[in-house]
Length: 432
Image (cartoon, rainbow, N blue to C red):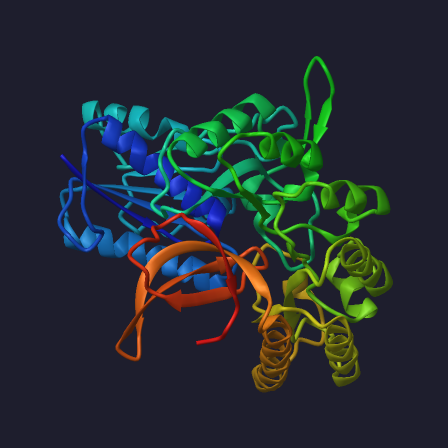
């Protein structure tokens, strides 16, 4: 039996897709590329924007067209939200639908479907996102495809309900993974040769787990992973600025394995826009979080996301957001044009911004991001950086090793046969 998988969306989705792939391998399936004929297709969908919805539908239909007799399994955020709202198109051609928090049942559902396909060719088990007793779904035991850096998912769900975001409805409420499970996976990854782990989740800063001894939070988990031999680097995916308190900033500064690279979600540099977005902080609070990090780390890499063209964003509000972003001086800026998402409050807000204005504002913000990114890298030219070697590359007919510094600066060095993938070395940064 052959199986093919396709992942859409975030790093959490990628983590879950690799876990489902391992389940299929353990069951005896041969994994083949998605564009080849297979007996089972698994599409892990995304629903963060209407474009992600469309791409999810396209991949489901592609699987059905490639192999009309195959079992097509669709899971993830699009399936969760579309099924909950009764808007899932009947012509997608899915055989099995799996909502979030039920992906661990993939093999069981496949076996049940093979024994007795339902009359309408749909078997699904969508978890109740309003259920307060939802437990964290254990998905692990696989070796990541990337050979130098491994993601460890520690929590799922979000309780923030930003006005533009469908994720709390797609992922449900916050659920945290047991510390012993997190540490067991980190230890296994260390034994398999991974030197760097990235702590990820839907809303990582909300991690909290009660066991018999204590209440664990995110920093407790970081400190515990840092004690594992073989793990040399710990990186955070994305955190909210409110978690950067004076006490927390001081604590994390003592964790030498923690990379000085912090993705602090911003979304807008204008307080009025932040209020309409239902973000839980002001620009002053955000600035204080950045200042705390810079007071405890030497020129850390601060990266962020910014949405332009949010409903009601006037030209004055955009300028305020632009000026605030510029004043912070980010290393990297990920810019998104606001996209309507059905099921969210923002879709019904008045004063929707025109596509033309969104495009102009996006171009301006992206240009600013490029300027700041170049400035950050220039500040590090000639400095000694710690490089985790990832792979050989060819640039202008010359061979190099490439990888990332602790600050997540891509570094290329002349190829040396004495070096190997996953080596960590000190090198003087010279852009190539």
